[in-house]
Image (cartoon, rainbow, N blue to C red; front, side, top):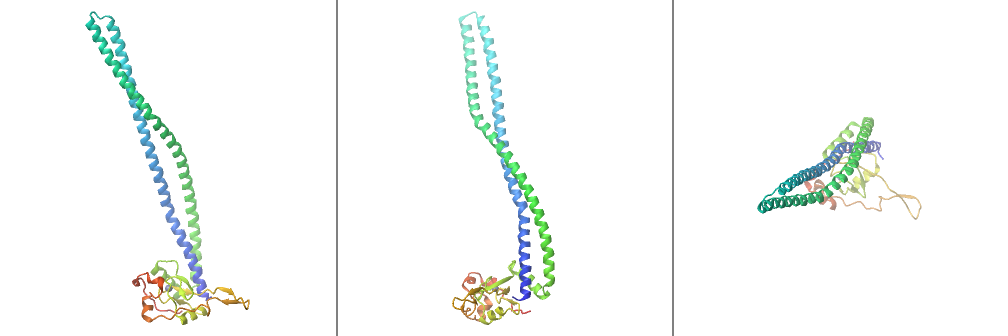
Length: 290
Ligand SMILES: [Zn+2]
């Protein structure tokens, strides 16, 4: 492999690690915000259940007070009834007492209803309190984990940036410029790609046989005629069954794709898989040889 390509591949692998780390560093706060939002909504649900339970208990207390009042009224009426002079008066007291007793029954029925309602509410609140306690602990642990991870990522990022600097200094300035340009143009960390079975593995352009042969020689840095990425050739070693020796798998046994017409090259839509992409995506770059 051409030594410049080797450097570019080293640079690319460092850039890929850097991109991964930056993506992770950016994703971690979002992840934290999501779990905190879930915790918040669980907290609010618990507060609502607690409020419902408190309202239930308040109403019960009020009704119990009402029952007591009616009972006091009844005992007062009963003692007044003893002093009734006429049957009419007696019946009037009796009637009033019956009314109070009726009120008490209504209050008590409602108290029973409230008791039935409070049971699941109490259970909900208790379960939610326990679940929230656990969730809070998990969120705290996750926060600590994220903080540690972010710090470790940042540290690693600094090291990678140093490493990148060291590699960059060894790459020829023109090639480094080309690398940066391709990276920006495709917004990718796949700047240098393998040519496999006579094709660019990024845009799937079938390379011209002469181009592919030159690439296989590995004595120059070559760029894909369609997507402009840096191409490299990585021979696969296979064992020839007859001779027992290694053969180049992409040699004569794999015929390179037929040469392209200049017009289809310009459109970069010659291969079946790239045909799906719109031709306007391709802005062919002239071959640059460094
Ligand atoms: Zn390509």
